Each structure stands twice: as C-alpha cells, then as structure tokens.
Amino acid sequence: MTKLGINIDHVATLRNARGEGHPDIIQIANIVHNAGADSITVHLREDRRHIKDHDLKILCNKKYLINMEMAANIKMMKIAIRNKPKFVCLVPEKRNEVTTEGGLNLHVNFNLIKKIVRTLNKKKIRTSLFIDPSIKNIELSKKIGAKCVELHTGKISRLVKNKKNFLSELIKIKKCSKFGVDNNIEIHAGHGLDYKTTKLLNKISYITEYNIGHFIIGESIKIGISNVIKNFRKIIK
Ligand code: PXP
Image (tube, rainbow, N blue to C red; front, side, top):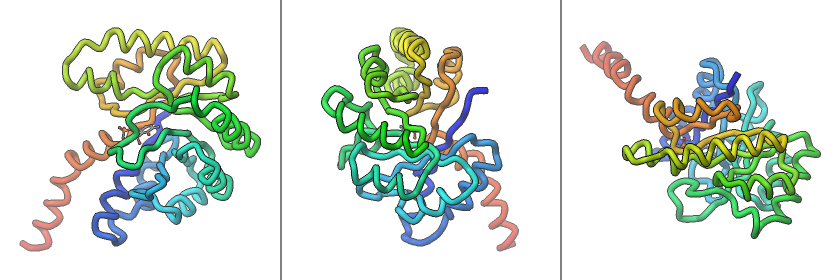
C-alpha cells in the first residue's frame, strides 16, 4: 500500500511562537501515529526555526518511524547518526527561504552527498534525496547509490492550485518515476500537496510514498477549530 508520511514541523512553528510547550509536539506525533501515519517527518533546519534538537531526540526514541529531513553536510550527518532516525531525506537548505524551494543540486554536491548517503545506509538509515523531477537527477541519484528519492512536487502543486495547465509536469513526474523504478530506485513525492494534487499523482503507481505537511496542519485547524470553540463555550456558559 502507498505510504503516508506526515510532516509536523508546522506544529513546532506554532509552539515556538509562544516559546512554551503548547501544542505539544510529542502528543501530536502520537495522535498522528495512532491516526495511521506510516512515518513522521521532521526537518531539523540549521537555524532550528521549528524542530529543535531535543524534539528529534525524544521522537527518535519512540516506536514510530521518524523521517529526518536535513541539509547535506557532515555536521547534520553526525546528528542523524547520534539520533538514529529510521529514515533521512537530504534536502537543500537556504537560510532565508520560507520552505524548501527546490531539489538538491546533485551535480555540484555529488561527492559530499554520495559520502553521506553511503555512510547513513551503512548505519541502516534509509536515505532519500529530495530532487526536482528529471531523468538526469535520477541518473545522478543512481550513481550516488541512493535507494530512494523524493520528487519535489512544488511546481505541479502550484499549477493545480492556480488552475493552470499541469499536464506536462504530470507527464514529466510519471516518466521520471518509471525511470526510477526501472533503475531500482524507490519513488516518493512531496511538497505543496493537497487533496487535489495527491489524487492526480496517485494515478502514478510508481510513487510509493507521500510526505505531506502544511496542507494537513492547515486543514486540521479548519476541521478542528469549531470543536475547540464549543469546549470554551461550555467552560464560560
Ligand atoms: N518533503 C520534503 C522533502 C520537504 O522538505 C517538505 C517541506 O518541509 C515536505 C515534503 C512537505 O511539504 P508541505 O509542507 O508543503 O506539504
């Protein structure tokens, strides 16, 4: 069955806005796990803007599968080895970006990424590469020795949201996914996904895992807020 990883970074962003403990990220991780998430994704950014080191430490000691997103550098690799998440996804990171804007530049960072992937794989940490969907990137991923990649779906998600023609992007993702599977690379997808784009991509049977964050947290507020208001109405009636 196709797997679903839930990114809970935005819960940490909300918590950090007050500098205290609510919402409790571990409690949310438990709820997400019990609701059927196959894995829980957290991005330990270099500026620690949402997930903190102690969050990662606690989460990695829980029974669920943690997918740690991180920049491709040796310092982060050492943190991953120390915490032993089940999965790592290497992502490009820019200090001032709002979110991960594109995929890794495998060409420029080939040797470093290869070293990190091979080291983490030896430590039994499944390591994927967050890449823009292109045949060239799949070829480079193969040379690096990656067993899985996550295709950046930001572009198709934006096209779908803006009601623009997404067909050529969809075809590109499909071709890329097939090429990956033909080369024994597991294909994951993520970024900007909502119900509509996920439904579209789900027709591509080569994609076996989705990682979704922002939409799920936003939608959860939409669906959940009336219950919380009802609770307060009961308290102050
Ligand atoms: N996958 C990767 C590798 C990401 O960097 C992100 C964003 O943190 C996501 C998935 C989730 O993206 P979104 O929050 O837009 O669903």
